[in-house]
Image (cartoon, helix red, strand yellow):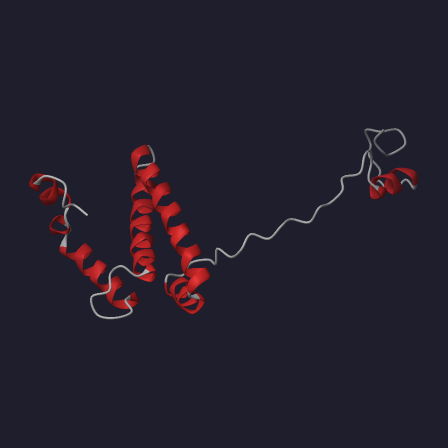
Amino acid sequence: MLDEYPESYKLAFGISTLSQADLNRVHEIIAKFQRKAYDTGSSEVQIALLTERIRRLTEHLWYHHKDFSAKRRMYSLVGKRKKMMKYLRENNFERYVYTIRELKMNDIGPKLPLPNYKQSKGMSELKLRFRNENLYPPNPFYQDGRPE
């Protein structure tokens, strides 16, 4: 990924700049979700790593709410993770369920169409019944106890 960049960029942004705790956390996540040895590219591993990054950015934004570049970065990571989750859900549902349970996430699920409710013109039947049968509670500001 950093092959085409100069050596100074590789040193600054490579895995070697992570703290030991961060590096251990990354290795734990990879070990938990990998399918076979040295598997770092499967969808589950990528989703788990993105989730970890999103949670860290969320924690950062809790204290630094005006860091708009971090907020934009977090939104782009959420979009990437959502696409990967959709792919995993469509292709390997068992691994998808395992991943969201382990990460304590919600199911993105398919988008269901909303029912097509026809909006009536004027007052609803319930409002008309309340008005006609004088079911409103007495109100001291109105002479007959109901709004006009």
